Image (cartoon, rainbow, N blue to C red; front, side, top):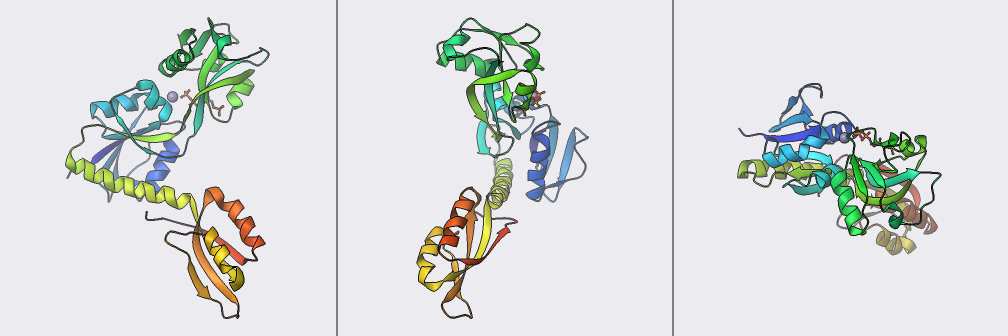
Length: 285
Ligand code: PRP
Ligand code: ZN
C-alpha cells in the first residue's frame, strides 16, 4: 500500500512541535527523530527528517509528498510547491535590525547599507518594494554578529523572542514578513496520496480546532438566559437544561480561546455561576 512521505525538520525550532502535532493526530512513529526516516504505526505515513532549508526543494522534486516548514523557508526558496495549511506554531518575524545606538527614520536610511542575511530573496523583494538599494551580504548562520565584527551595517533575520537581538546590541527597525509553521505539498500528487493527505489534514485540523477551543459549563439565571446564550454560539447552539433549582438552567457550549477572558467577564456580569472550563481533546470540524 502507498504511504504518504512527509518531510520534517531534523532538529530546530519546528521539529518538536511538528512531531507532537502528528502524535496528537494519532500518528505515532516507530522510533525517535534520530534516524533519517521513520514509519508510522496504523497510518500509511513515513517521515523523513531533513534540514529545514532543504524541505521545499525535496517537496518540489517529489522526494517528499508534503513537508512542514517555516513560512520563511517557503518564501525564501520560492519553490514550485503549494502552501496547503497554516499550523499556527513557531511564529516569528523576519526583520531588519541595526545597532541600537544608531538613529533610524525609515527605510530610506538603509540606502547603500550592507545588510547581512540568510534570507537574500525575501530581503531583495522587501527592498525592491520600498525602492531602496542596499548591498545584500549572504551569511548562512550567525548573522547577528555581523555588525559587531564590521561585515555589515544591518542584519535581516528571524526574530522570535527578540533575545538574540538584545544580546547582540541590535534593535528591530523593519518587519518584512511574519512567519509560522505551514504544510507544503508537491503539485503533482496521485489520487492515492491525495486521499491519505485528506485524512491527515482532517486529523490535523481537528487537533488545531481542539486546542483553540474550550468546553464551558455554567449555571445561568433564567431571566438572563438569552443574553448568555448569545455569547456562547457553540458548534451548533448551546445545550440548555433546567437545573433542579427553580429559575436556573445549566448551559454547555464551546468557547474560542481567543475571546475567552472577554466572554468570561461578560458571563459573570450577567450572573452566571459555577463556571467550569474544560480542555477539548479532539474537535471534529
Ligand atoms: C534564529 C535567528 C536568531 C534567532 C532569533 O536562529 O537566526 O539567531 O533564531 O530568535 P530569538 O528572537 O528568539 O532570539 P535559529 O534558532 O532558527 O537557528 P538557525 O538560524 O540556525 O536556523
Ligand atoms: Zn535554519
